[in-house]
Image 1 (cartoon, rainbow, N blue to C red):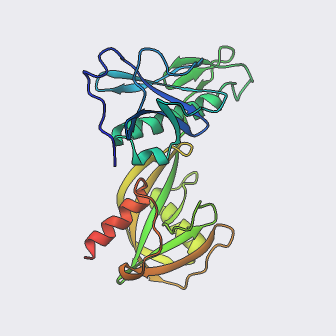
Image 2 (cartoon, helix red, strand yellow):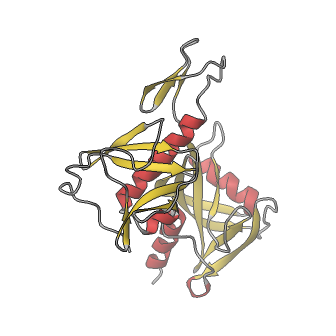
Length: 266
């Protein structure tokens, strides 16, 4: 179950939420059987390069990465960012995702790509090269998800890069010069060999692994026999609601789309 967010009164003497990472491990504060983001004047562990993220309930949120593994103690525990979804307030988990994206951006933008000079932080989301004045902002990579309907079934696939045996939706990155709908058609044809129609927008979700924006679409099967792109997918088939395989975790947009379809087909 999710833990409750600490109240403003509890944070009165602890005015900063600290999102501390080692790789994808996020440091959480243990409060009995629940977990939350550490909220204190000083960071719970020594840090050097602190980045501003946002504010939550008028409390500043800051993030930093450490160079050595975080250790579990009586009051703190490191937890994978994905796993922390099951324990954190949803808003705090979303902020943790943004913090992780900023750390990734900071790590990969330390030197100017034009002249190689070390960059300087200008704002919370911008850097500038002091030599050639080149400006750098966090890069967000859009990717599509598509739920394909065929009569009383949907197409579910297992990608080779999935960690686990669950099946999800056809997905892929937007290419230069493409519309999102063109990307949907191309990815479906490349990965499955199927023709689709009636493409409609479902929703979107920031996906900080490391810095993507997932954009979901619904579409209808038109024709074709499934021919999986072997280097991308290991399994794929149409499933009815009575014989669904293992599904993605509830934190993902793919799972929200599948749950929506199940609700529509009660």
